[in-house]
Length: 109
Image (spheres, helix red, strand yellow):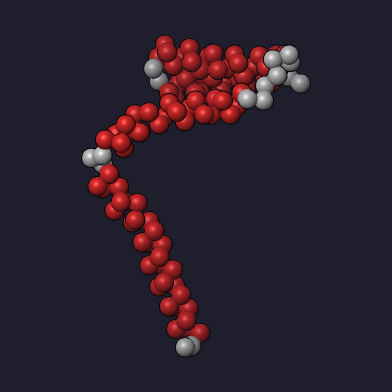
């Protein structure tokens, strides 16, 4: 096979594999949309992911150091704003702003 033919064949095979891998999730997802398990996961997954992120972010904090106050205060702001406004974007923004403000000014290392 010539170099040009080999290159064209390689490009065609690569394109076919890429297209198949991108189309496969949509083909598999269609029958799952009516599944009770998927509906249950879609309602519980976001909260579970957020709990896992909070645990991961707070797991190494030492309660004896003053720098621990910034993340805990930011967590309190995030939860408080979310309970008050029920807006995830606003609560994440407020918690991030509180953490940045506290960590860079009051509790800077």
